[in-house]
Image (cartoon, rainbow, N blue to C red; front, side, top):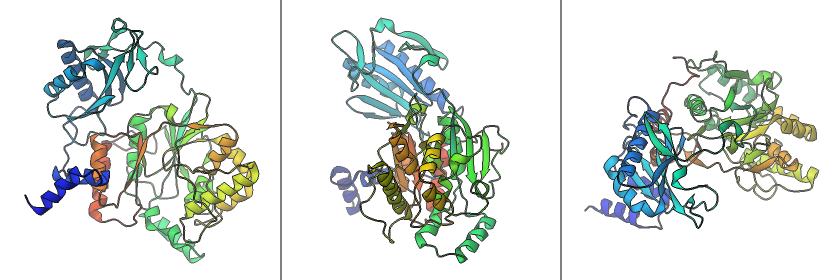
Length: 484
């Protein structure tokens, strides 16, 4: 064995080595290439997964394993198995799905297809134990998720087959979930638009601009908008309308006539003056004509990773649900820090002075729930700061966060904020381990959303191609918002 191979094997064994490095080594050893992954089978992912899940359920039934369909989550199927029959179930799965990747935990097992580029398709096995009352409840969710005896199971259709399934005691129209319209708003910019670049160059000559405010990575486009739209269409069917806010030339592939899509001119929305400042744009999104009271705000580098429910963003009462964000750094704004950090500190001071309490955390870089009425209330309270931010052509030291901070702080003061269970991931597209991160997401996403961001600035062409290949494999298309 060569020295390099011995070093690789040691990395795999050493638990002190960071997880992302161990994953990268495994990815390299398995000789996977992000540019040579096999596309999904003809016929699409959902029919294939349904068929495989039905075959697995019939195989379980044949050997006497108590198993049933729990739910379908888009292109993932959840199957329940009696906990005491775990070993019998494990012996069946390799026979039915011989080349699929199997990972096991105490509370569940996961089966991922033997073809790459599956966009998170697969089968999840949840384990169900008997309690003292003779009921079955999901392991790890004691008293939370349970059914009664096996005699309560019903037969339902899965693909072309009938299988045993957990009964639903609450009809869909009566389930406890948001029942109001929810829209999506996307801010998008494309620095390949020559007219836009000319306007930006003119603006830069007329004002002093901090270098970090015009970092090229902030404005670069790699067709992310196409894949974000596909992810919303595929994984968030509850979204009624999608608003794309931009002042750039629209891509040729965009189906502008789709009734669920509206393109909003960013310059007109801001009152006629061009800006190159995302903080300014975010401060005025709630003024889009026709926008619903409840909406979700996306940057164009954010993507939904699997089917999501509106309950990840709003509760049935309409409260905005957030994940725990990063702590706002202590101290006053510094000239050498990121303009977003400075804006978060400005928002913190505004809230502290007005409400008498100090927010500690900012929003995560994930799709964020918003309410128009809350944004309007914030605008009344902090009119001077918000107006000043809107008029800043480039990010500046007096800017404040709004949709990514201040509006949620105001919502908290109004009692309209709750905690979301949304899980997310972040990939630095310029990082040398990005390829293995893509492979992880393609194999089995454990998150609801992910962000692919140029945190390291300019990236090589091959790295850019890897990102585009990954997105195309994760979100195969075309989608409804593209010209066919």
